[in-house]
Amino acid sequence: MLLRIAFLSLWQHRRRTGVLMTAIGLVTALMVLMLGIGEGMNRSLVESSTTLMSGHVNVAGFFKVTAGQASPVVTHAPEVTAVIRKEVPELVYIASRGRGFAKVISEAGSTLIGLGGIDITKEQGLQKALKVKEGKLEDLAKPGSIMLFEDQAATLNVRVGDALTISAPTPRGTNNTVDVTVVAIVRSMGMMSQFSCFMNEGTLRQLYQLKDDTTGALQIYLPSADLDEVKKVQARLRDALGKAGYALMDDDPRAFFFKFENVSREPWVGQRLDLTNWHDEVNFVAWTVDLMSALSFFLGAVLLQVIGVGIMIVMWISIRERTREIGTLRAIGMQRTSVLLMFLTEGFLLGLLATLGGAVLGVSLSLGLNAAHVPLPVGVQFVLLSDKLVVIPTAQWVVATVVFITTVVTLISVIPSFIAARLKPVSAMQHAG
Image 1: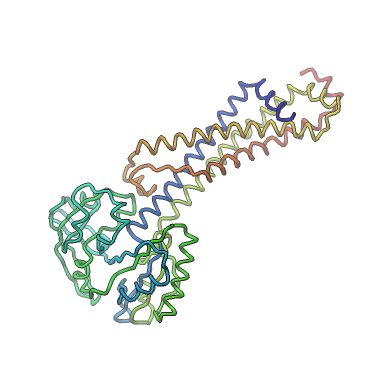
Image 2: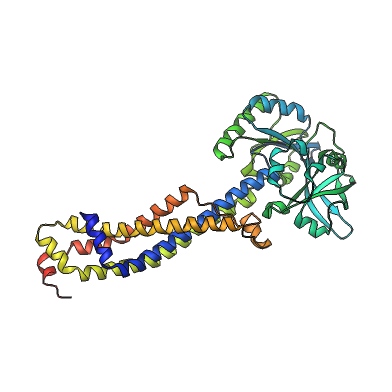
């Protein structure tokens, strides 16, 4: 009965109801859209990080020839790989990645870039994720080959087939150079692709004068990127490597290049392994995802405050117009609690119908933007972590938005409903306004 009365009341004042529902629906659509952008950023972050910089779990570390000189390498990598495969049988594959940071020089200019040494034949995920603009990724199997992202190629003014010189200090403190040929140029993947490029693993070892059984990191790819599951595998693997006799670094949830200063100050020498997960390696940009989610709720809360004042005023006007109706209902036996619930139900129904419509609009806009493949300017790519706009309105966020805004609208209705319930039947029936 209360739902019927509430619906009839909203329908009787449908012009006013339509204005309020439009406002609430637009706020809902905006929140769904912004939370979808935040989820898209998170997915882009996982994809780009596990493609360019990290596996789901990483076994890396540092080797120190002297106490003050550290190199980001893992020695005797095949033996470490055997322990990983035994302890993590559910893994999809392991990628061995060399790590370096060097000056890349072309005839037109130079730039400092992080280097990833790869065996392209064993990089299942990398080949699927990278979108080739020019050349062939398979040619990275050739010694002396390098792959660049399109922004890096533009900076160096090179194309496929052009020669580059790479200059870098070796772990022994001497500078070394190697000549390479650009074999592929791939499309940028947002901010993360600005930091690194890929080259033949053997050529990277030649540059740094490393042995064949040495690598920068063993990147472990699992069936799921869920952070809770990844951390369980990380903890299990840490125990296994410790029991196998490997010296381990203290847990430090940061990217490896932030650890050089601390490692160089420590007095130990030799090899120590460092275990991280994908979130650790990109925590220096992960805050942008949290910021976008917080901004979405903040903006939604501000807009809801403005709309909330309007809802409260409209309900007060509605109560004033329906004062005699309320008095009549009270006179024939309706209790104050029922009057209160009647107006609360009206507010709830208004919020629910509006948010459902807004959620449908927000999801439709999100799907339309994804289908349009909207390209982003370079500056925006740094913030949204992708070269195109990605909006993923997950069911979890859509339901949370609908519940949140409907609850707020219902709570806003409490004060006017309480005022209506407090009206005395005789005074209400004599009201002439």
